[in-house]
Image 1: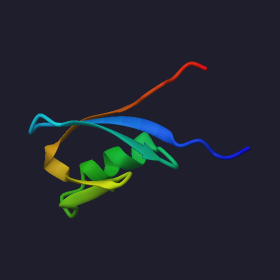
Image 2: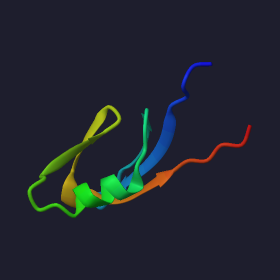
Image 3: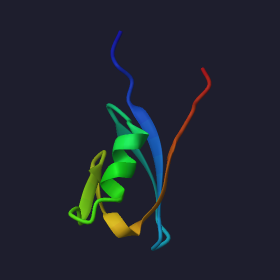
Image 4: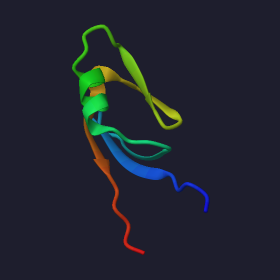
Length: 64
């Protein structure tokens, strides 16, 4: 069985809402990165976001 990608909804303070797919998702690690003043931008899936522009990241739960 092939690993399924995890879908995330990323919303930004600039008004964008994106659906991105990632292989792994660790909310604690993302929160740590978002709170790091040393980081200016971060990649989520195939997108790159300004750290201060990220408003919310939510895991999309799909029922099979």
